Image 1 (tube, rainbow, N blue to C red):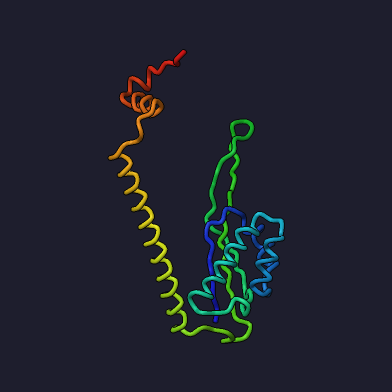
Image 2 (tube, one colour):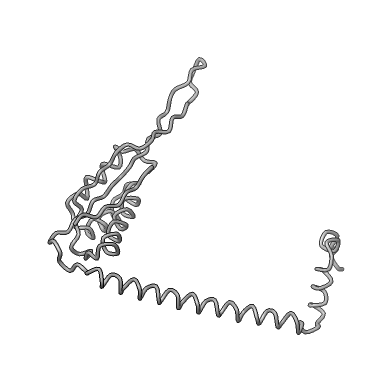
Length: 185
């Protein structure tokens, strides 16, 4: 089964992207990701992120094992070109073409169906993740409500009357005090 991920409008010329793309064709997916982390090219970070996205697509959408995936093909094409002008001598203008590229990574299984999860297993895992996420959200909401109640109670009861609190309260009373604040001597 083939899995793909796309990256559009990458602001690097296709000629430079192809150098990195040809490097990982035919490699195992995880090896290619580790190879891209070592390559010293501007493109390698974007390609690594795209490759990891394709691996995640295979795992989450189709239940494929990431150890069984390899890079079948990396297609690099030209995206829209930005046209800019540079002033030249004698009142002329020279055209500058800022090229963009489209990248598509296609992954495939080495051994068809090995360690593949069924749709029922995928649904179970999704439900479990959703339950965990909702439980965490509820916990965070309850903590926020408790904090708000504590703040409200403090405001109604009031902070202890000390000289510092009285000064702060008098300073916050009006905008004039903030503007015309004087240093005490």
